[in-house]
Structures are given as C-alpha cells and as structure tokens.
Image 1 (cartoon, rainbow, N blue to C red):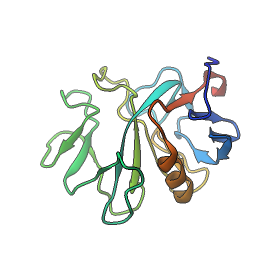
Image 2 (cartoon, helix red, strand yellow):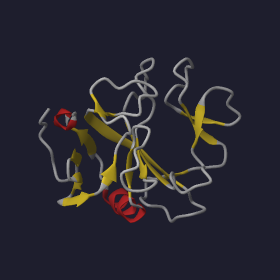
Image 3 (tube, rainbow, N blue to C red):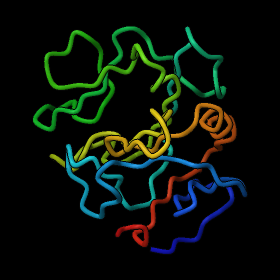
Length: 173
C-alpha cells in the first residue's frame, strides 16, 4: 500500500510517525503491524484510518482542540465482541467486557479515535485503535499508537478535518 498522502496525514514509518513535516517517536502494538487484525492480538492494523474523534481529561489538561470531548466519570469503551456495543463508547454500569476511559494513570488524558472497525464493528476484528500517551519508549501497546505527552498534545492541536492515520503494509516484518 502506497497511498497518496498529504502533510496533514499521520503516516507511520520506521522512523516514527510523520505529521506536517516532522517525525514523532511512537510505540505500536506489542503484536507488531498486522494485515489481519483480531481482538486481543495486540497488533496495530495496516490501513488508512480516518480520525473520527478526540477525548480528553478536563480535570487534568486544557482542551487540546475545539472539537475534543471531555471524558467523564463512568465513560467506558466496549471491547466485548459478543455484545452489540462492541467497539463503542458506553457508560457505567456496563456488565460486559470494557476498558475504563477515565483512568487513574495519565495514559488516556488525550485519546484520538480512529475509525478502525467502527462504527459497525465486525465480530472479533478488534476494538478501538487510539492514539494516546505511551507508557514509555519501546513499550508496546495493545494495538494503539503511543506518544510522548508533549508530542501527543502537539499532534492533537494540529489535526484537521480529513486527517488520516496511515499504517503501510510495508512495515510488516
């Protein structure tokens, strides 16, 4: 896959994520890059993924972009492939498998949402691929892409309508 890209695209490369002429170091899924993403494989999926939203913790940081939505207490993300809410934001109480968005750690202080397997999720194709803060350099994610906090803030402030995340299959080992 060698799609036509623009400077406003987020392009994953071996050097990091290229965006608006800069390279940002990042972490990817601990399962590597995959052209056959599955729930729980820890892989970052190949493809051209639209940016469809941004969430942030208003009790911790300033609004990173005018279109960002606050993460409230009780906000969750369904990762239960057997439930109709699979790969959607839901509210507590929620008895099915989910991920807490309002975390005690700062990992999700900013969450940029992609359209991976969304809005009509396919069974076991994997739940959300987020762009979020990394735990530390070279520490793999569950499939998301992680960044240094200052880089994530810079990226979040500069994303525009039509920005895409591009993960080329040339990165598969």
